[in-house]
Length: 172
Image: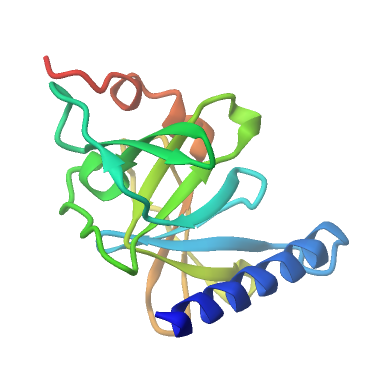
């Protein structure tokens, strides 16, 4: 157990260092990588607020299956959406690798996305652009392929948060 805390601390310290470098212009195209279901996603650092290990969730009755419930993170309540399940994929396992990606405060919404795991910062300049297939989901942006042939999709968080389906969590 102590080993995970040390590696999480090292990850956070590394992330802070990279964030500082990115703000200084040293890493022009560094994006945060996460895995949700079988998909790999890239997010602008400005869009993401914080990444936290999965805390206990309080379920909310009469909500859609992809709505996981509410999380109390340092005294602030966040609604938690299983990002993979929201898109029609498999439910995200709630285990030690799962993470909550808290939406940046600049959006004015207390929401978090449940993802399988975080994958650190990724430089899209080291990836090949992929011809984007027509995707009806407005939160899917540019696509890239890394050296292991993994397809990475750019998450347009503002577009996701503006979707009526994302905001309407009640059963119909």
